[in-house]
Image (cartoon, rainbow, N blue to C red):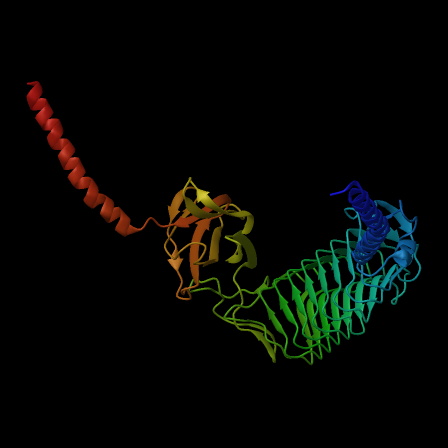
Length: 465
């Protein structure tokens, strides 16, 4: 190759390199622009996703007033209200959660109007004390109007017109574990359906503890209503299940007016001036051969199964055919990722009920205390799921092996045991019976072993001599 040709090639290579650098210099900003655009889109998407997720708003650190926090919240947000007294009238008009601090977050209506009003679906309120509404019949601690799927739990509602009122198609809501006292009416449900009222303590209402008017398909379960004029009031209500409630020391335990086709069973109706008042109503007062406990029932239990031999007559159209001889209790046992219900009918006070799945290191046991007036006769009828303990048992009362009766109602799913004792405070332990076949096998195995050992001992002794 000549020098001239070498120079021409160098020139060509230089031109190519220049064009390549130009293209690269042009491509690099373009690439950065594309990357920047993609990154911006990513950030926009990230920003959108953050805004779409529920926020937690704090009162008073973010907003001084609860209502201001609600006004600035979006659907699904949680408003956490720190302990303190908030003199407000609060309206919740969007789905959100209002969370108080251990009932020490107090919303005080200053004796005027509704304290809290709900006008939206899917509202959750818990952990508050709601007090001092206006004094009138239409002034309420918490009033829900046409609001569905709400959850009102673990609140104190006191010194209001209605403590808690669901009205006008406020359907499919749950009211649970509220303490409701010193109101005109404790809990009211009117023109609503498919609600659940459970595990509330409602006492010292001027009129009704729990009142339903125009309600349907509602469950009232495991509430304690005491020292009200009416413990539970049903008017123009149908298909209501009333079960597991304690109605104690009211003027009227339960009142039905123009209310038919309701199920009322497993309630403890104790020491009310009038246990039940019925006006133009017919309902069912027992289910599955078990009714209610009436403290003024004086029938006998000749069969010793915890059920009275004669009915408890309320009026001509309402009869409890299977009155209970003792109070009804339902204990929930979580075991192996399931909830098991152990129920008792007992004339003792039951305390410290528990299930131990490693009693004495290896076996399952139900353990509880029974208390009654000293030297009086006590009894307990207990229903045990066979998945929890099988149908062979040993019952100990204060360490003494106690005879029990396995009642005829026992089946493949549940065992019914009945046993008696003399009252004081005693510990009951129920464990599986050691299977007799295992005892027999052990005897069969141990006899030859004992014989061999005996022979070896004899031969050893002879060898020593």
